[in-house]
Length: 69
Image (cartoon, rainbow, N blue to C red; front, side, top):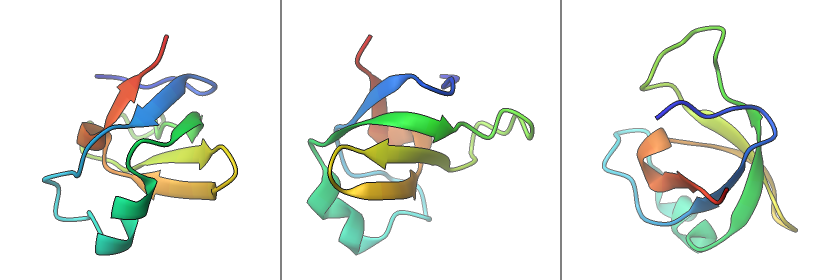
C-alpha cells in the first residue's frame, strides 16, 4: 500500500518488520496523520512518519499501519 501525506491512519498491530521496536507497542490502537510517506524514495519497505494524536511524531513500518479513510 502507498501512503499519502495528510492521510489518516491507525497503528493497528505489531509489525513483522525488523525495524519494529518494543517501545512501539504502546502506540498500537492510536490514530494519526502521515507527515512523511517517503514517496521520494518510493520504497515499499521504508518507514512512514506519522504524527500521532497527543503522542508526537514517530516513524513506523508500513505493515502495522492501515488507512482510516
